[in-house]
Image (cartoon, rainbow, N blue to C red; front, side):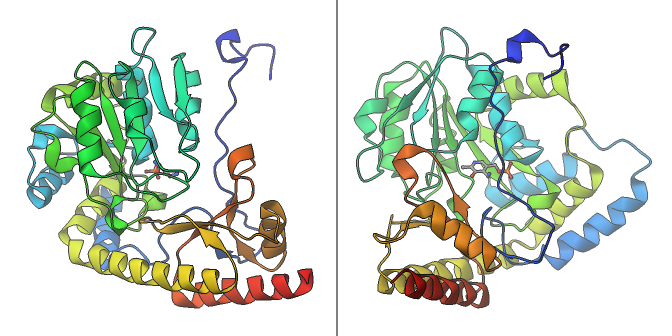
Length: 354
Ligand code: PMP
């Protein structure tokens, strides 16, 4: 820290993103990216857009917004595009949390929530998940806090039903409830259909996972037009040009080729079933994931050791050091070929450990 760094951030512990090492070619199953390339249309649209890079991008994302609204049957003023959904989540912390609206989220969830809370000087409560990592909905009813719930949750992949989400929304009518749907497209029911019914519901989604655009950085917040206006106030007060021209075009191309993304999600769901079945045969236990990752532990293998030994063998998975989950690893569901390499290496490691 330099002597110039503002004291207001002196306790800030930055988020640690998953590693993106360039020292060798890994089988990369650590940051929940899609193993499939962006849609052909996305690539073509982005290449065409590159010819206009001398001009500022459209701060209103007009074409992208219209295409999204048409595809998903919402109004254009019910969606805001952001630089990845991390940007939308940060905006939500800025817009809807303060001393009188503290944040609340599970103790085991996306690690960026407490960082956004600290960054924005928002008090927050981490509500413990049940022993089996499910959410106890009663813990979120009538708590009068701005609630952040990843659905399905990360890194467990466990979904929450719309009935439970409705209970939380109805019992906290004066607070915003943010449902982070980064992984919704791999088999969880979306809450987007509820935005006209609940003016306190904000849903965030991303193009990073199911739509193969992690490097393009495109996310969105979907909700009541008044909530979206508030987020726009934050956006126009920080970085109005937060989504570059190529990414806007890639996003539009992706949406016009929605069938491609949906087919890929179906393959990932199939591969998830394959991976969990094979892991079970090797003695692993895992949470019931509806995401594009599996959260698993082996009774005879230390979580950190498995991560390190796989990395030595060229396979990257994600290990978290937090006490409650340190025995587990989060494994992104890749192609069958990638999963077979992973499973073979795990087999070797288990043999060695005998
Ligand atoms: N929410 C959750 C639960 C995530 O795991 C991630 C990915 N790290 C994000 C949001 C943010 O993803 P992105 O900014 O790429 O949209």
